[in-house]
Image 1 (cartoon, protein in one colour):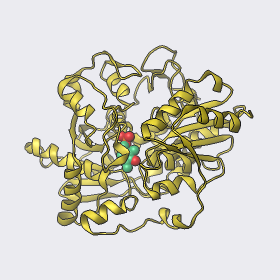
Image 2 (cartoon, rainbow, N blue to C red):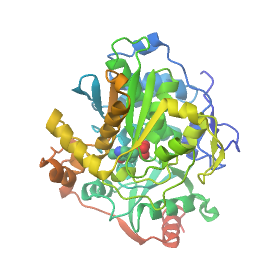
Image 3 (cartoon, rainbow, N blue to C red):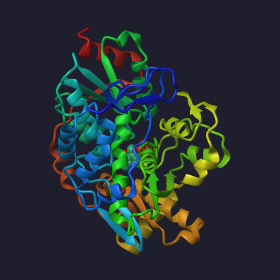
Image 4 (cartoon, rainbow, N blue to C red):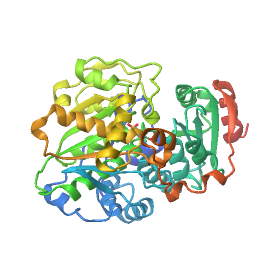
Length: 457
Ligand SMILES: *Cc1c(COP(=O)(O)O)cnc(C)c1O
């Protein structure tokens, strides 16, 4: 087998590791985030060769460049075939402006793409490991259900999901609590920030060392690599002239994992002229790009695009690293990044809830397409970019729709009077039985539950 790609920590306090170790550890031992030491370069004719292939084959062609030496090609192909058995529609909205719908997976959000691949990678790795792996995840809705579904029934892996009951929709909750088996869900009487703080404390708790804990949040590099594939897929299938035709990509962003997928695709050779980053009122990154000063938003602002209510995106540390700077795990900028290069490649914009609703309305009236709040933030961001850059009006552009409208029926009904059609993956949810634990937003009862369940104490 060829030599395995190495992954370094953004804090540079530990030696580089291969993909297997990066996946199983989640976060690096020095609390930095893993990044590949280099990005494989796809020349224009290698990209051209991917045009028209099924998504699962594009995924295998991209992911093998990172996983060779850890997983053989046959395994990679088999895992991709199994993970990607759903559609990835590229819908023309108007002219050369497209919407990529990433909502056809089993939990109807884009998080299925990465969660399904990461679960399959880890399940292969765990065949050769002792004991069991416990995955802790705090969720504001979509991560929990995507991770729980992806790992459901995987041998030697247990999943614990913490969620704030008041902040997730009924449908989102049922997607997590009706599985059972190796999935434990805990309703924490608090906010998403409380759930995340409990998970972080558990990772740092020496008393829990007997349990092998890891993360499935987008601090895990296993969440990012699969998210580069759909940008490659969109480009090769939409570009007229493959040799260098530039494209603009717009990503509605919260923790910036999805956007990092676009950054990675760019570094692999996809001529993404501009990555448009659209946030809701949590505008710490647009402000950072404008002023060069970074301030977290605490507590995060509550917006209708609830999966993007993030006041300090963990993946910013990766972005800063790729632009030559250093941001530590507390969000402190220890070394400045090349802001001019960042401003050249990225266009960041914050979209209010009012604009989000107006965009849902306009898209429906003008183009007969139904957007949900996250995708609408993205579409609004793309329109803002074109307003600011009239000379680019004919540029090929893709905005991503990150969830299925049926996950947010109340908002869409109230805005355009339409009841979004339920995708098959969400059918029958109402009838299933829920199981979940309930807990105050305190660390002690959580620690006790982990010890009882996984350390036999
Ligand atoms: C998680 C999520 C996002 C934000 O993605 P990040 O990678 O955290 O930026 C956007 N839309 C939906 C529907 C999500 O679930």
